Image 1 (tube, rainbow, N blue to C red):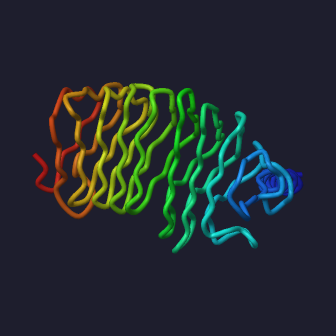
Image 2 (tube, helix red, strand yellow):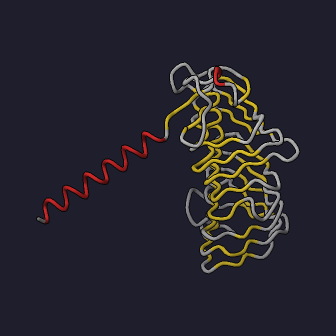
Image 3 (spheres, rainbow, N blue to C red):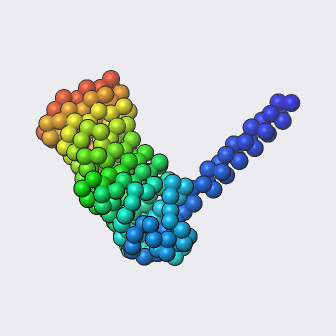
Length: 240
């Protein structure tokens, strides 16, 4: 009976994984245009909350390596990739609309270049924002993500306390410029030589752990320091 129970449980897990993957279908832009125009997408349908959306990408097949897509209405996606792969470039113009991403927005991955443009009233919410390489993003006041991950020389600038609410990771010579105080429910980790935390006189509160140069290849730079309130503070690798 125990073996049957184990097999039954495994079957449920496999089925759940299959269902989850089936729901997140990859859709790529084959040309520039409006998000709501079905003809610019590899599937011939307008992507939504059950799709991984690629704009400026080497995949899925037939996707254009360079593309710019504009929202003319509020939309949603499972995950969003802007600039995915060497030589790619993807731009999303939100206009005055809202994009809701249940998973993550990836800005410039694996050698790609990605950008987000916002008009007055435009904003996005996402589980996380990951920026790589020389890519950068300046948050709008109403943008909100659970986590922010910067690596490989990327940079980001916040403008409101609610821009990032969970975890922040700054690595590989990347830079976080704080345009406002941050109230984090998770942890802040800034690591590797050349990485910069520019607080601009803004406080960091709420984080259960803060790592400043504790991990990685060398000391980090903390500029324009302000108060840091945390349950546990770790400082290492020569960081002052």
